[in-house]
Image (cartoon, rainbow, N blue to C red; front, side):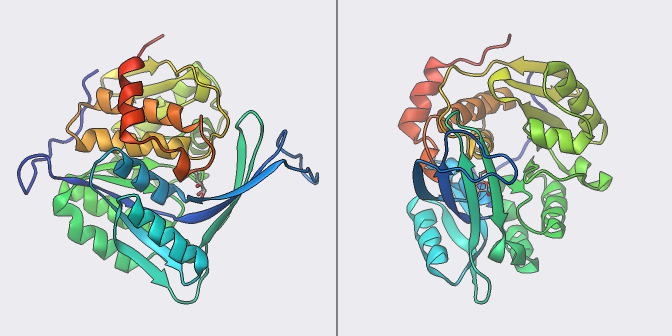
Length: 326
Ligand code: RIB
């Protein structure tokens, strides 16, 4: 399939449009355990580390690491975590002029448990992420003329996400929504604002109200989401690959043969690289290839932002791993 994204001429000429990621930024506190604990169970882990995280910030870093200009818009708290997160984001090459420090709330924190097979559970304390408001909406609005792609996720208040999606849609900017943390539903008026919706199987299940666990259920879910007005639905199913559904039809792509040690931020790697591909003027199918490769590489390393591939690793894997259909 070719893909149906809006043509977006650069206001500055050439390929100078950038990506804007609005969302959450967290300090991730990670414990690695032999298996995920059951409810009420205490498990002794074998490794602890902290890592820079938060879905919005991870996506921005994923874009920056591929050499594409990107802004991150969000809030940290006035604490040690906030200072470290800010410095790290800047050092990764992300434009942080849209990052504010909240004077009263703590920085976002994610408590993460990762099993030996790379599966995870995550609980977040939103802190300053929950204070993202009209100021951030205005920042995004004022930067839309130079923006090719707006990356959104749901770790910040939903009215803010809705307001910027409306503004970006009107301005002809490509809107990508990672519907995570998984919502139980989204207002019907929101779907037509989304150019590319990228749930994993858990998030897709929440959105459609039935388990999405294999190819038939994913195809059914994608059709329901497209009927609600989304232009392109991309459902990622881990080892089972990914589906791209649009008005042109449905295509499945195979996953890549990697050994997963930590799947945290795999979706962020996918979304960031997808946005970087679109901002680099690649056709949508090629940009999806970018996303699939970045997502696969990220699960081979520990941590959220530390696992996001750099340009050299990414482009060499992109050459070795063609986009393959079953
Ligand atoms: O997508 C992974 C991210 O989810 C982690 O970095 C954590 O902070 C949570 O927001």
